[in-house]
Image 1 (cartoon, helix red, strand yellow):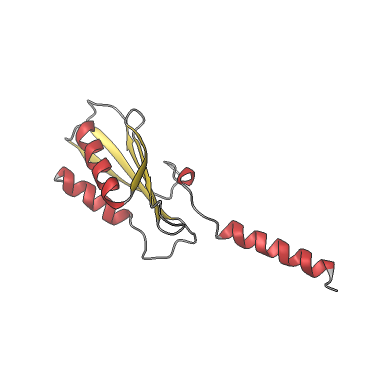
Image 2 (cartoon, one colour):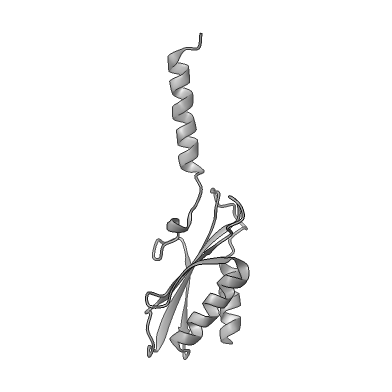
Length: 133
């Protein structure tokens, strides 16, 4: 017969492991968490920035949320439990501003994030290239 304390310890250990390595879902991708990378855009319209960001996100992944009024774009790989979850956030989300801040947050669906697999610099470079900046 297995000792109850041993079984209880194994269950607690498994729960802890799942908490630490749990899946990253689309709801985990939020602005201003300190995890993303930001860059400023000058002399471009909100429409130009929005269109560039949607284009880049849609080339890489499947768009799952686009809200032009709030400046939120979310995309993910829908075909498996592995892959990427992406958020692009444009602030302020309106026309006529002199300066916009674009935040890009790219997370692997299964944590932990492995160094060197951060796609944010590539996404930022692609958005900047579409904007000619």
